Length: 323
Image (cartoon, rainbow, N blue to C red; front, side):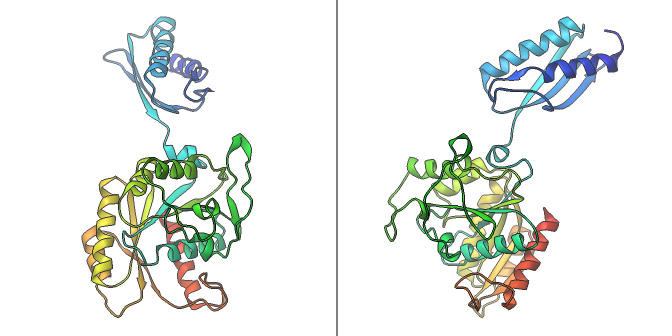
């Protein structure tokens, strides 16, 4: 066996030259952990692969066993394969996903999404937006975007549309103007999957904000399945009905293992119920209170001329500090 540390280093180098057939790439920098159980004489490895696949895993196990046991004389090898986070396949390895959720329609999720995205952009962050409210897509309208030709880029992926240095995708770009969408079931999942995996998102995006749909149905669950490590902001108006629905949304995200960052209260009423109710029930802080005021120069987006602009800059700064 020779020098243990030398043997481990040589084993590591050899394993990193093996091919992960789920990606077609070498295992370079994919060994997450490598330990030696002295009592059993066993090398224990945790290796990141693109996709857990029985055939691929078995091929790698045989190749690694040969390197460890036959070539270097260790008694055995224990291997755990961890699948690459799906979110890493969508954009860059450092891109963080933030779901803007609240369960109920008409509480200002999209309004919060576009203004927070714009504020994050203004503090120097690179931002994308996924308009996942399939039936009520309104991100392009709020950003005053006109339908343009769809273009295809590298690897035959759709190029995201752009406005104010932000990358945006929405069903509005693929549907007829003023025509409703009647999709259900597999069509919904396909569209969401395309938004995630078939869009040429820039790899250096800091954040992708997802404007979540109403309720906890097919689209909600599809996103939750693919973005298990996403962060969540719960949006609610102040009244009891909005807060109760927002609570259900928060509980759903929590049960799915996603990280709740906090609550944003979109203040449109004189009630003051939601803050205490949601922070107590969900165990998360209130991040911001946005008094509803119509923007002065744009229809939906606050800029430097609006008092609420600073509130969103403050919220963006808080998000940056948390993530």
